Image (cartoon, rainbow, N blue to C red; front, side, top):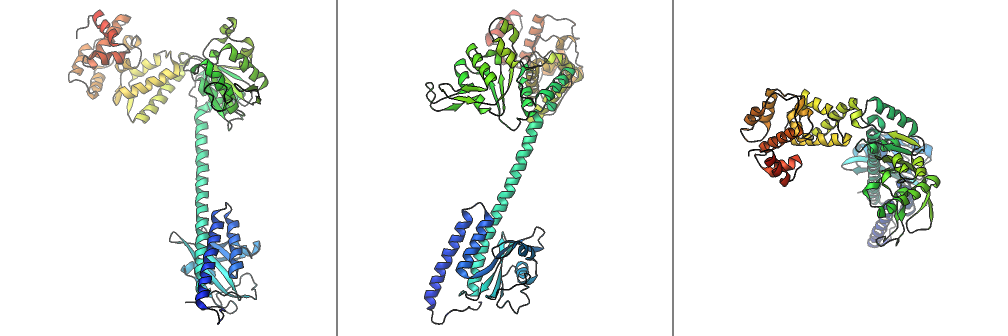
Amino acid sequence: MYKKLNIPDNEDCATCALTFAYNEIKLLYEIALMLSNTSNVLESIEQAMRLLKRNSYLERCTLFTLSDDGTCVETYASIDLTANQKKIATYKLGEGATGLAAQSCEPVVIENVHNNINYLNKLGTINTNSVSYIAVPIIQDEALFGVISANINKNSLLSFDDIVRMLTIVGSLFGGTLATQKKFAKEKENLTELKTYYKEEVLSEYKFESIIGRSTKMQQIFSILETVSPSKATILVRGETGTGKELIATAVHNLSHRKNAPYIKLNCAAISETLLESELFGHEKGAFTDAKEMRKGRFELADGGTLFLDEIGDISSSLQVKLLRILQEQEFERVGGTKTIKTDVRLVAATNRNLEEMVAKGEFREDLFYRLNVIPINLPPLRERYEDVKLLIEHYFKKFMKEHRKEMQFSKEALEVLLDYPWPGNIRELQNTMERLVLICPNGLIIPEMLNHVLPFNYQKIYMQHETPQKEIQNVTQNMQTQPNQNENIQSEKKPMMTKMSLQEMEKESIIKSLIKHRGIQTKAATELGMSARQIGYKIKKYNIDL
């Protein structure tokens, strides 16, 4: 037990103890409240120190925290020290009373600061009213976090035991608050880094360098994108379905000065005419039957950023007028509203339709066409990008193999078939074909015959140009879970490929192969070939296929 300081002899001990206990609990409650209701931890700790000084005669109350290298304790907060004194008040572990408390993880009490060598007095001044010094270690998660110390004024009525207990509790509150703050700060930093990482990932995914295309036509488009994307000009992307118009629009946004602003997309053909106006411009509450609350439209949501309108050629004449106005004046009203709303939107539109022909027929406004066609970008179909087909096949094939955890490769002949195929559905068809191929084929080598299940059955080049070696057929069919005699069936069918074959002969061949694969179950064969049960029944009868 530490000795008492200046307790009057005539004080009733029981009453004194009760009063102190009440005051101590009240003081600790107020300190805990201060620390929990603020975002500025340093300011809260300093307020708590002022409260300690006022109520307990504790001077120069100082909070030290363990340095990053763990060799010393450094001043974090103190209300009675200057900025320069805070820099000086640093103690190595074992140095002075403060360093001893840190090293031993035990409280250190100096009864008389005027004649104790462990009181270093680094600051060079001692208040004449200060008679004692206490340093108490702060432990967090069974490890040293720091030290809390105080000089005791000669007017204090508290015992060393009382002060040690109080500083231990207060130090624990300070340490817990600081530890939580550091944890949140670290998590926030990690979250910021993660956000930055994913943002960079998204940008790298969609910037034009990563749009697959080494062909001359695509390189010309990349050059145009690099030049026009930073501007505010409206862009019209044109091309067949599946050529990647949305990717181009996304690249335009990410290469512009608006890349950190909203990027909003809308397919005009996917929404009915009655709802499209509301989707574009928003509506006020009560504007129509289901308008139970105000809703912002895409132009309002995209303010400051980019709006991509796909299938722009499908909008009605009335909406064409409103779209023309917003392009000219950058303003609009919500459906059912009278307030004019200003907006700053960079528009990228796309279509697979012949707008010039529509203008000539009066189906599309000529003035709107010229407003949209400021920067035209014409995407070539995949059949005109032969150099890119192999790159796209490899990209999507690897992607889906990874997704579905399969290991496969193309035979030379199968790859040639895919390279020669015209891909009328463009990149979208190629992507879907690669996924189907990965899903339905077994691990191992992909041969031309397997492509019958993913390419149209009337694609003659599969039958006209390639002859798969017998050994490859045997290796592949051994991996397929089919009836035992399937290899025998395939081998018996294997003949030198004909140079010409009619569409009817190819169709009959496809039906026979599918029926063999599915053990004569017509419904499964029909599903695979894209026919109804009635259609395949008719074909079987028509071609006199013996079941």
